[in-house]
Image 1 (cartoon, rainbow, N blue to C red):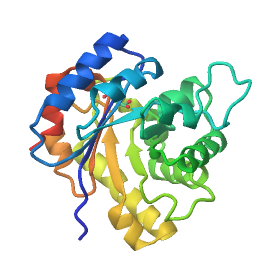
Image 2: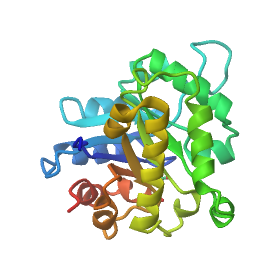
Image 3: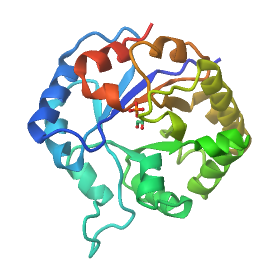
Length: 252
Ligand SMILES: O=C[C@H](O)COP(=O)(O)O
């Protein structure tokens, strides 16, 4: 079995001033404790991207934007282009977060264009999928996730997607304190890997990292990370406190 490097990421959402972001980023970058040798990524607000990229320079911490627009440049008030994200020092981008899907109208078709734009500029894509509570209760979870992957990633080859990370984030577990049980997470991760294998081949599926997000905390990360198909975490709330995020990076 391929050994996948754990991927522990923090999505700071709409939090922190530039000064606060710099301090948090520095505290994470300066911490030499990384016993799982995990890849680490943090996603500050656009306003803090450049300062955070500067603060973590030379460390193992990668910087991500929380979204990207698909156009190269032009009259798109408030949008940020992939080249601008790169220019600010980010190497990664989160695409398809459920808050983007539900609050800002990002459809599968829009997300597909965002993935294309990000890949064109060499950004590593963290592609988010996940079901709502109603969808889970209607037993539609696996179908919903397959359709988000199918439509969001339409047209790309395994080679193009080779650096992509998939984040499974059940919408009902985000910021609610409700976490999927390790078994629930494992079930979805395993079925997602199976789907990716049927689409992009076994080699791709054995290497792609599928991370879990949704109320990951210091007290549940160990059990979640113990699941064979869970390769990391996308952490919201607890990524805003250096001590907690560092504990999550150093899961047991
Ligand atoms: O991107 C992160 C997720 O939305 C999880 O957020 P949370 O850890 O606050 O539930």
